[in-house]
Length: 179
Image (cartoon, rainbow, N blue to C red; front, side, top):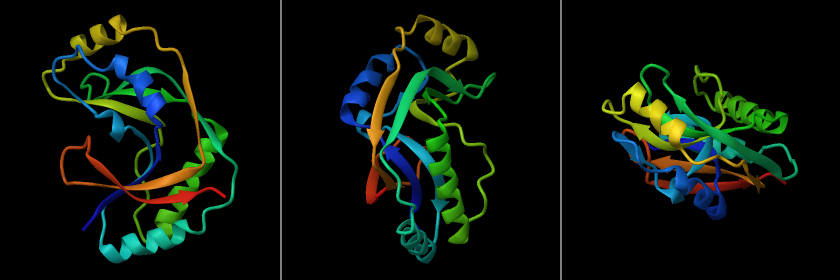
């Protein structure tokens, strides 16, 4: 069974702009730059027939123009038990609409509804237990100033991941243009 998700690929120049924020936090497992992405819909481990149905449905994606994505600053998932360092993305109406369409197509393919609220972001690191809340707070307070990074994309990428705790490597299985 493939482990799949749809995402917006992060261009190399934006990945290079995120690189200065990686490092200096014990317990962080930093994501490789070429694996940076903004997840739209995690499908999980799906049967091959479900994956094929979903890929067919992605061919019905509504035509739309290129989408601008702005990464606004550093943040963390997990609160008192930090799990990830991320670059938060502006939840623009166009981005939210694209994500909602991915959700609708996943449901049509027979997948269960996503239980988590969509929070657009690019994961920079997954955190182990030794990354204490205090260490994460110190990392965030001492990080370089985050100047917003904007990129434009015109496609959704379907990625596969090996079974692991996340973080790649990811393989681009298909690209679906917006137009």
